Image (cartoon, rainbow, N blue to C red; front, side, top):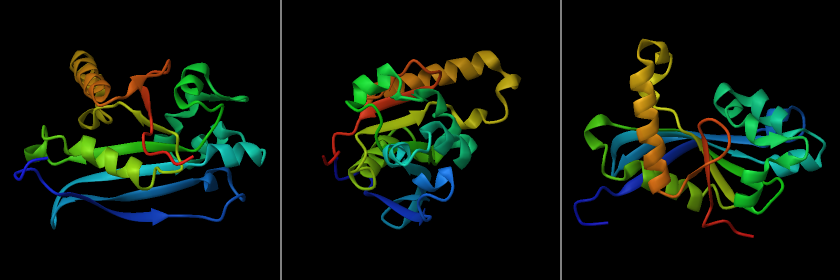
Length: 189
């Protein structure tokens, strides 16, 4: 970080519910702004999915993700009745565990290309992601939400570019379309 780099802060609100009544009670949802001092330069939506506690309580992790939101449902393919599929099991070192889900990171157009998204993800992993051995995201270019049919070739190009960006910052493709993951270097055992 240089003197000219923004000082990134995540200002988040949190939704926490009592555990065990509904499957999606095992997800804590954080939403808020990415700021540089007091200037809003983006927004973020994050989830901590306690898939391990759900599994131990007899709730299928797939049901936890599917019941919460369409965004969380993108991660359903990484779990089956016995926990994570092999690629994620190998990466995380766990058959099932809590996961930090990066739902959305949006950076103001004028501020893109300065590593702000990467730093926001790092802050999230280092703080709210501490109990999570794995960080996952669904690589989907936000500008194409609801518009993929308008330009499938352009969408594919933009998605490939986004996947390459996430690979550069340590995420790897799972065997599931668009879902990427990496070990959380800040995980507290």
